[in-house]
Length: 266
Image (cartoon, rainbow, N blue to C red):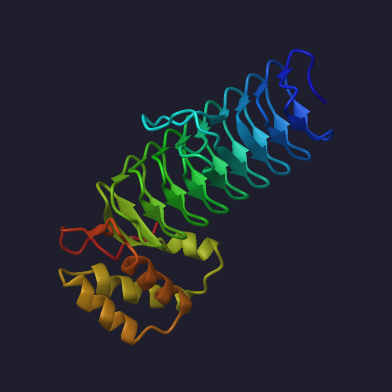
């Protein structure tokens, strides 16, 4: 299952059910789990561990050294779960500080030329579209969607089932269940994403009411949080409030365009 042109480091561990394609380079103590498929010209480096059934497309580089001036060659790692897809020419870097890790969960889909920087933490079931860039220490929660050519600043958190529209950029935290575009501007609730995730209309309606109170008009966010919290009736609303209260960078702002916030649904 290892093509004769592949270069595999003696320190690497490749499961006998894995497939290693032509001209693949596996450098260092890489571990490739069961039924993984690593296609031609992909590169796996350093202390990188792939779980089961991951697919690595041509030209992708996993576990490369971080693009961080503070990196001094320390031992760090990249830990990847199961059933992920890494498309062409994507890069995922390992951690910066000694013993640290970049962590990718399971069931994620990373499209071509995307970048996941050092010490990011990616949950399960996310999509990172072509050309999207996640800077160091970004946290991407379960089933979030980062559209094409988005730019996410370091240390930003993106909440569960949030959606960043194409070409958008953020240096602030993106609350769960929200749609964001432009420059860290929330436009509404990710209704389509919630429906696809199995949320019934009543649960979506409660989230939309909470969002409208928090972002639908100019307001003091602290007072709005207290008001919504007093009447919080679902786990999703409590999750939204807890995410905002825990923010250290500040959260995305509401749109200033009259009537444009909380009405968009795709």
